[in-house]
Image (cartoon, rainbow, N blue to C red; front, side):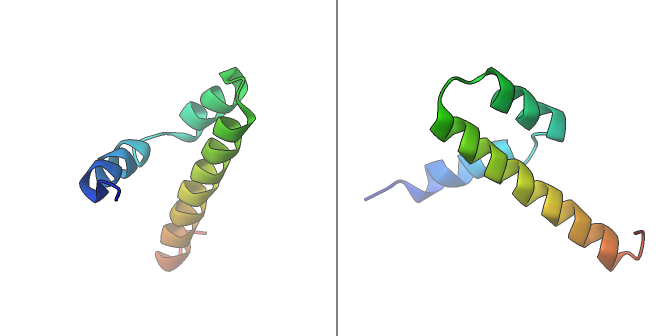
Length: 59
């Protein structure tokens, strides 16, 4: 069984990544799986930010 609290800590660490951070990770890793994961993570946080802006009518 996985340690849910540990994954929550990882999620919190990921939530502070900037788009530049995720791009750097994607460019510098040689592991295609890691590249895909960070591409998805970056997209998620971009969509979240877009949703916040739309809700605030700042689009």
